[in-house]
Length: 237
Image 1 (cartoon, rainbow, N blue to C red):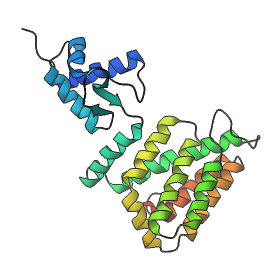
Image 2 (tube, helix red, strand yellow):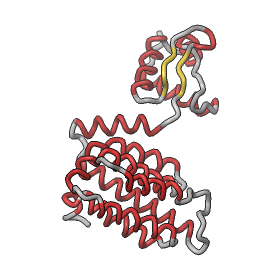
Image 3 (spheres, rainbow, N blue to C red):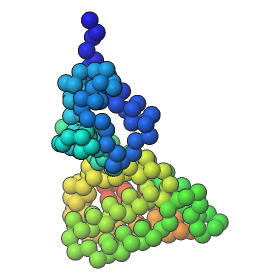
């Protein structure tokens, strides 16, 4: 008698199917029964695997018949990562220091890469994003009237910084990290009271990138995060 596959086996098969068929966001997976037949597994195994994928934000289940049946692949990979990271932070399996350290590494690399792309040309190279989004986020911070509004545009700035690296995975990870720590970011802004020092840090980062100075861009990122989270950086920066 053939052993019933576990949902982990089904997840692996679905992942291979997505890759082999070249499916992208917005495409529909086959209906449950058809998928079970194609994978050679029980419908209950497929159902359990699809529940996991939906929980992770990879697919959105659709109820219907014929062409309307099956699950649709979701566009944003960072949405799944955000939920998982927020859960780990809430359960204290991840510390805020670890999240900030990860941001530090990613943003230093991104700023260095963005600045290097402009060095000697005054223009981004290698498909890197320009600085328009950074400048727009900075203007939004200037107009913000509450800590929540400031953090919204602050988040846009740091996500634009990741975008400027030209690496889509770095961008997705940054968006998930910022989504995870929104509450902590608002608390940090409220604790500072005056956002002038944070604004100055953003201006310095933007200026270093526009000047094509990777070393200054990396230093600006470090000092900016230290200003925002001094209690986390005192001992190891």
